[in-house]
Image 1 (cartoon, one colour):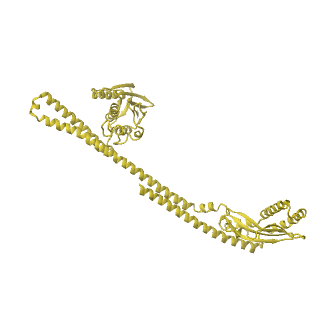
Image 2: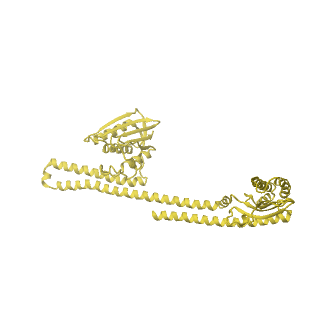
Image 3: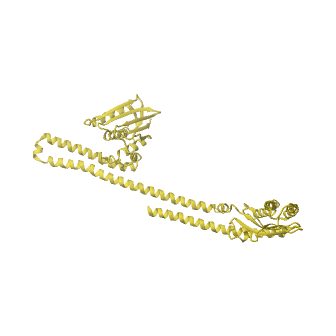
Length: 448
């Protein structure tokens, strides 16, 4: 299990490594393709339209700069108002550049035509802005390096070009980038097929791992139950065989042969133990029949109340020497059911026997039968300690015996398994309605 778990972890790590490597490869391809197409797009714009895409912006900036210069003549260079006016001027120039930008729409159209993703926006960085005045130039913003000279440039930015322009009233230089803010999403979208295959392989591997683990644990549990079954079966077979052997040896004694009463008692004991041994062997043989689905029901229409009375009378007679109380409530008249009376009797007998074995001291068994919604409902309740919570999900499994009952009552762990098989072959169901320390209640429902 540890090796399988490590193998699963290794497969997941390998898939992560492969996807990570593929993502890096696709990122480099995206970067190279994008930068190459940007260069081609700029060349096409300048060659075919003889423009940089900012001609209208330059004309507007020159006009606006003339008006802004008048405001600077009214303030002192070191005044705090000057710093505020610088910020306003710079912000206004940015606004004009973006509003009259014709380069971005051209690049988007170019990318679309060439089948590339156009999910980007412009990013403009002004490196120098100076207003030209007869009384002296006014520096608004100055950055001699710009973002192109910084080592930590955002990976989503792609450099396009640097622009310089000088008009009658201004001098401007700025860098232009396109910003693929959703680059990771674009790359992952292109990798969708590989991602799905990777996730599918991990999912399939995980499912196989957990199925294998589940089957292994189930096999281990079944193996343990079979071991318990063999131990119980050996004990159950040894008891009648030992009794028969001792009784047979005793019968060989001439003195015992002369004692008619003792001889008859030993013969009766041998017959009884032989009958018990036959039942045990029949149970073992039935296992093969159930597994091979060779048991077939011989159904016929029977009067329910008559069948139940016969089963209850036989149970009382069989256990006449036991100290128990059987309370019956048959809310039935002349209803009939289509069932195999013999197999149905076995199912009820097993439930009644369990109620007697695991009931209180003395055992009190409640047997209720009624017809509800075109179905026969039978509830058998005892006054025992109930079934432990950890055993409730397994009590109908073959060979399973609750931990609290293994040493209290001997058995093969087949009784409730037979009950479930028989009732389900009648298209019915049997369930446990159990409350700790309040006894066990088995509910059997068979459609009429």
